[in-house]
Amino acid sequence: MERKKLIFCYLMVAPSLLFTVVLGILPMLASLGISFLEYDLLRVRDFGTPFVGVDNYITVLTDARFIQSVWNTLLITGLVVAIVIALGLLLAQVMDAEYRGRALIRVLICAPWFVPPVVAAAIWSWMLSTSRSPLNAALMDAGIIDSNIRFLSDTETIWGISIPLLSVTAVRIWNGLPFVVIFILAGLQSIPKSLYEAGSIDGASVWNQFRFITLPLLKPILGVLLLLLLITGIGHFEINYIMTGGGPQGQTNVMAVYAYQQAFNSFRFDYAAAASGVIFVITGIICFFYIRAQLKDGDDA
Amino acid sequence: MSDLQSDNFLRPRNGPLAAARLNNTVTRITVIVITALTLMYILMPVYWMLKSSFQSANDIRAMPPQWLPKELSLQAYRDLGELIPIGRYIYNSIFVSLVAAVLSTAIGSSAAYVLSRFKFPGMSIILVMILMTQIIPPITRAFPIYFTIQSANLLNTYLGLIVAYVGFSLPFSVLLLRGYFQNNCPPDLEEAAMVDGCSHFGAFLRVILPVSMPGLAAVTIFTFLNAWNDFLWASLLLNQGAMKTIQVGIGDFAGEGGGVQYINIFMAACVVATIPALIMFLFVQRWLVSGLTSGSVK
Image (tube, rainbow over all chains, first blue to last red; front, top):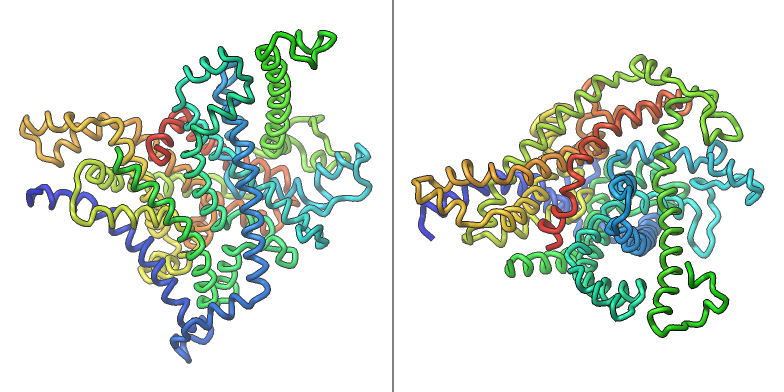
């Protein structure tokens, strides 16, 4: 490529590259670096930040609270991803079908997208409170329960799954659904309609058309979606933090909240960095497949 | 329905077609029921917020709860300004989100353009770095970013939060616009302009950007929406008195107990915080589906 053109290319990407490096790559590397140092904010002035090898990882990985947060993260992410994709497949079809009032249904299904997370967490905390919850009142009225469900504070567990964890999972599903529906809808619209016409002439039921036409053709998109949801699910912070702060007794704590609390509540930046390192490794592996898929797409285009 | 009404509707009579029709009825009913239940689940909190914001605090607390409000009033909206400096918070949020969104689109579009058009040394590394920044959860770099902003003396300034937002949304803007340019701007567009004596940059500025307005607008609005909705970074980087964004303002009000004591006013504040996001969403929603296809799904 001629020189002038090259200079033009680099000038055009330079600002974006600067932001990506300063606020993306360098902080990631800094965090990885700190994870091998002792970095206790309260001791930094007297003792500095000596190199401690993998000690922070050992400390974090033997901390029962962290192990609990890892299980919670995987459990919540698994539940959210499975349910959100299943519901998303169904709702995307509903959005795609033609009927009167479709535009309104589309906006309504997307409601959680434009309700700010703080607002959503506030309202859900109210709906899921023990004594003020309208849900509890309605269930009591209907005679389904005879004492209030402690949605966010029950400490009993059933097969290792606690009610607060399920409650937070329900809010996470609520929050994540619109993106998935729209994503799948985008995929649906790339399937030629003629396939369905051929299918119905051959007498295939709606269900069989879904199974043998829609699902196979959506496979690549569902693959990308699955990777995306796993990554964002494992790193999710906001709703768990605002709704329960990880409680009660760490039952809804996830890795991201653990890392945040180590840094900004206990000032143990080294433990926070090690916990982030674990998130980084898990998401990094998934990310590898995601980036490979994205780059392969780019070359085809 | 005729299948359901006939005597032996369980037996497929006219071969596969009738069986398919029966199956279709069952499938349709199942789909409608699940959709209705899911819609209730999606809309219940939104309805509850809206309804409560028009009630008095006493009516809201009434047991059993009033699913349909007995009385409606605008009192909560009138009292809102006295308890929460809501106007100021909205101004802060709009200012920060708007500047971040415009900056991010401007910077991102120029990178997206060359990344969609040319192959140059280092290009794939740059793309991988952008993809990684987009995809690795931001929580893993929360406190290094906090330190970066702090050491630049930008804590508790509008600029600090704006810089952080540009950093977060940039990968998204670049990747989406790259897809947009690839799909919607054929290269002969600027080739024609360059034959007429335009430079590369001139062609980008005078040809590519104007024809890409819908894409640019959608990316800007999307970025605005993300910044408007953000709580985590705003609460870390800009949590001082008058400069708070509306999300932090609402979060702090709830944290100080105002969410229970002045529940109706709190709900009115929540509605007010949602409306700008709703308006922005209505602008982009038409574009969302096609945008996602060309940008990240492909």
